[in-house]
Image (tube, rainbow, N blue to C red; front, side, top):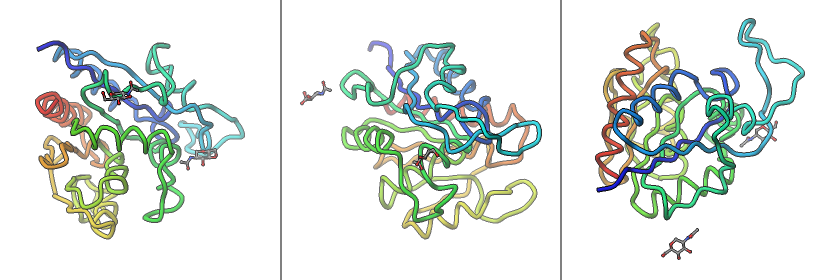
Length: 225
Ligand SMILES: *[C@@H]1O[C@H](CO)[C@@H](O)[C@H](O)[C@H]1NC(C)=O
Ligand SMILES: CC(=O)N[C@H]1CO[C@H](CO)[C@@H](O)[C@@H]1O
C-alpha cells in the first residue's frame, strides 16, 4: 500500500476568526508521523471578519481565508476547488471559529446555516466515494448539514465549565443527527458514513489532551482510507 493522501481544509489562521492553530498542527503532526501525504486547501474568500486575538474584538481589517491559511501551511496550500477527489484518500477539517464563520454561516445563522459552496462540494465528494472524513471541534457541524442523519460527537451535551459549547450537541440532534457523548481524548466513529469526530477545543481541556484526541481521529481516518 502506498502513502495515504490526505486533504486538510483550513479556514484561516487563529481560533476566533479562522482555523484553531493547535488543532491544525496536531492534525499535521499525527498525519506526518503516520507517513501520510498531506495537502492543505482553503477557499479563496474573504473572512467574515478579523478578530484581534489579544482583545477578542473585531477590527476593520479585511483578510482572505486562503491567504491567512497559507501562514499555517508555510505557503504550501491550494485553492479548494483544485482538490481532485481521484488523487485523495481522505479528508480532515480542523476546528476554529473560521469553520463557523467562513466555511459555513453557523456562527450567524445557527441551525438554518449554509455551507460555503467549495467546502460543500468537497465534503459531498468524499462521502459519495466512501472516503473517510475526520472532523474535530466545531467542524462536525458541516457533517450535520451535509450528511443527513450521521452520527457524531462534539464532546458533551450538557453545559458546564469543562464543556462551554455543549448546546451545539443539542442543535445537532435538532438537525437529525445522533450525538454521542465522548471525552476529549476519545473519538466517535460513524462506520456507515466513514465519519470520525472528536471534540478537541469544544472541551476546556489541557492542550496535550486535545493533541491526543486528534491523534485518535487521525489514526482512525487513516485506517478507514
Ligand atoms: C475522477 O474519476 C472519475 C471516474 O473515473 C471520472 O469520471 C472523473 O472525471 C474524474 N475526475 C477528475 C477531476 O479527474
Ligand atoms: C459561508 C459564509 O457564510 N461565508 C462568509 C464568509 O465571510 C464573507 C465576508 O463577510 C461572507 O461574504 C461569506 O458569506
